[in-house]
Image 1 (cartoon, rainbow, N blue to C red):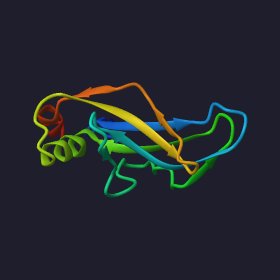
Image 2: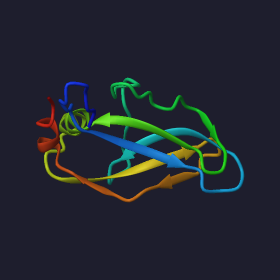
Image 3: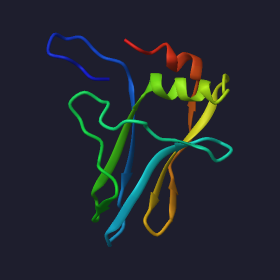
Length: 120
């Protein structure tokens, strides 16, 4: 959550991050959240987190470097509801490189209705 100079906090955000743990450079072309049946959620606009820009993609990462994208909980919840998903669902962070290798993180349980109520 962003924290402002006056002590106020903003809406919660999810940060989906890709880290190159190998010894050679890799170029990331997509970072997203994957639905159980294979659809993916990606932000419709970049740089929505106040004061922190998403990594412009494609991005070439050397060993230990990271790329990330941010999505507000509210936008995740609204996107799921628009797809007709009203119950808790598992979303998986996904990164795709330019060689079309797909890397998946740990699934994350999301309640679309709860997430839409997390706007400030």
